[in-house]
Length: 224
Image (cartoon, rainbow, N blue to C red):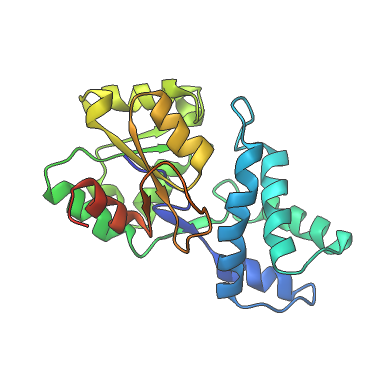
């Protein structure tokens, strides 16, 4: 089972770079990506159980961390970018591109005979987004937090997914990009967790770490 955002679907880093350029801040999409990867790690300690990953406050904190890593600290620019983010491509937002490793990961999992699911803290749009980027054909089910009424890291959302998969928790693995939400949430439900860590910014963790979703599948299958 996979997270959606930052695991199968990536942010449109180019759109963020273009928005910053409109405010006189010129960075390339690669710099935005690196800043976002670092921001995930900084955000993680604030995602305690009961703190929604989908709240405006969480998204604003996340964006501020991205901007700080890009050297953008002027409050006027930060506020302008917060407003831009809220309005951009509503209701889907910035997560609109398939990660390059997503299709190979899903195809390999299906070829191995696995049931493939997605668990996402989302606003009801994740199934449509997965279809729109061409990933839906490999996915057996999607559990969207706004549809089922419970968010990660609550173990109940993982239990819903395991039931849909028709397996025992110990027979399932979950791949996501946030340690406290994805790995610890899965573990609390008895599911194995794999952390997406493209550049080693998470440091030492008590779980398998993968460069991307395709690498995670190879780890799960014992191929890497």
